[in-house]
Every structure is written in C-alpha cells, then in structure tokens.
Length: 367
Image 1 (cartoon, rainbow, N blue to C red):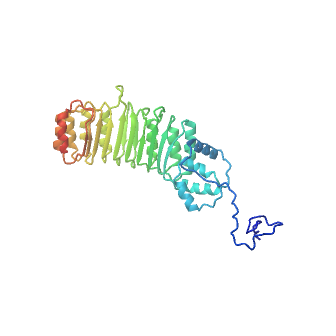
Image 2: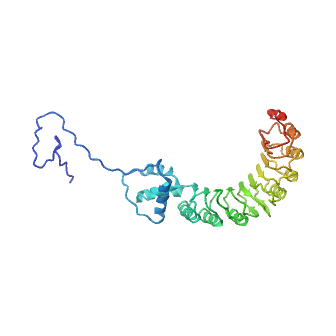
C-alpha cells in the first residue's frame, strides 16, 4: 500500500495533532518547497585528460562500479557513447553495469580508432593492448606515439586485428622507431586485408622487402641507407618515400625506382624525396610501363635536368600533377612542360629551382 503525504494539503503543516484553520478559506495553499536533491550528470566538454587517464587506470585494475540510476534509454545512451573519445568511453563504462554493457556494444562495433598513446613505452603498449581486446571489428587504426616503438607494437596489433585494412603510425620527434624492414615486411605479408600503411621515423629499417596483393597505399618517411629494396605489390596505387637529407645516405634510388616500375604496374601517384635522385633515376622510371601515372613528385633531386623533363613529359602524357622542386631544370624545361603537358597538367611545382627565372613563369599561365 502506497502511503500518502504526511503534511496537510492546504497549509503544508504536518498532519499529526493538526487542525487546519483554512478549511473555509478560498486562498490557495502555500506550496511546499521541494528539497534539493543531488543529481548525477556527465560533463563531456569539460573532461580533463588527466581525469580520463585516471579513469582508464581504474578500469584496468578493476575499479568498483557505482549505480548511476537515472533510467537513460539504451538507444540514447548508445548514441552519446559513440561520440566519446576512447578514454572517456572507458571512464563511462565504470559507472554501472548497464553503462558497461552499452560501452561494450560501442567497442565491439568500432571500425576506426584514433589514439594518442601515453609517453611511457610500457604504459602505451599495455593501454593499446587493452583497447584492442575490446574492438574485435577494428579495420582502421591511427596511432600517435610519444615513446620508443619496436616490433612488439606490430605484434600486438597483428594479434588483435586480423582484418585490419589501414594502419597509420605517427611518432614524435623525441621518440625512436626501432622496427626493422624485415619485421615490417612480415607484418604486411601476414595481413591479407591491409590496403594502407603509413609510418614515420623509419631510419632504422636498413632494408625493406614488402610483398602484398592487397596493399594500395604505402607511405614511409625518414628513410636512410637502404641496402635492399623490394616492393612487390601489384595493386599498389600510391607510394610516398621520404629519405633524410644526409650525404651519407647509401640508398640506390635508381634501383628502387626500377623495382617500382617492374612490380607495381598500377601506380598512379609517386612521391620520392631524396638528394640522390638523378637523371638515371628518371630514365629508369620513364622506361617502366606505368601508363596510368597521374601524379609524379621527385623532390630534392639536383640531378634532374631538362633532359629528365623531356623524358618525363613524353613518357607520361596523362600527368595531372608534377613536382620537381629542388631540381636543376631551367626555363627550357618549363617550355617542354608547357608544350607537351598543357592539356592534362593542372599543377606544377618548381620551388627551389635556381635555374628557373621569374620571366618564364608567364608560360605557366597557359596550363
């Protein structure tokens, strides 16, 4: 049986021992003030990163969950949690059992993860491993790493994400990437669904041997002194290789380009930045059967001359973007570009070319 109010409905005074004197009056009763009650709420915009990391640590050690109450509809709560960052979602999953179940649904349905890992190597690897266990459907991962990284990170990703399609690893300047070329090659070779790989600070690789039928995009930066380069990816459409600007770099860029032309026939976008690019490199590239090439960027190649420009222009007649910044081409090279590629070329970059004079830039107006 539901009990009624213990106060008088007319005057608000407790009923016990009370005789209401306002029974005959028509004035409205004085409303009883409602006592203030604390309510639980989540503030999504003001969440501090340190608080979220503390919540994540609490979850890792099995922190005690509290009942939030409130009766949120599951669908509404699911949409809210979909918009939380990873650390915020971990913190929300510790509120109560119901919230944990909804958060688990978000983790299981997640296909893309963008995460900045803690600066400590052990903490970052453990935290990443705990997140990947929650996301069996992950297809795309983008990591910003503030600590040294080695092949253990790749092994953790390979074990937890068998259907991975895209991997991006950004590394801070103060960190060191110790992943070797053999380790990266094994990782790519075992991933049958991997189509995009982007990685920074690859100066420790020494060599690279990549063979994949699914890889379509390959970006590697800060490369240095490759003793051996084999990229056998028949479906590769875009490749970007940035080498460090050091005179002791022993990489044979000409052999690398020759390899790309032989084993990557579907290339459409090529970007190579290295002081070792020469006219021989351009000849090796122009001799390849790359009929679908649309973007060619050969940056910092002081050995590229007007003869190189002629080889490029007559070999790749469908170019839409050409970047020869840092080369030794002259005004004659610009004239060749304007005469041969005027119908297809939409962007031409010739920054830091000392032999190009300002008077001939008027030719570019007609592109």
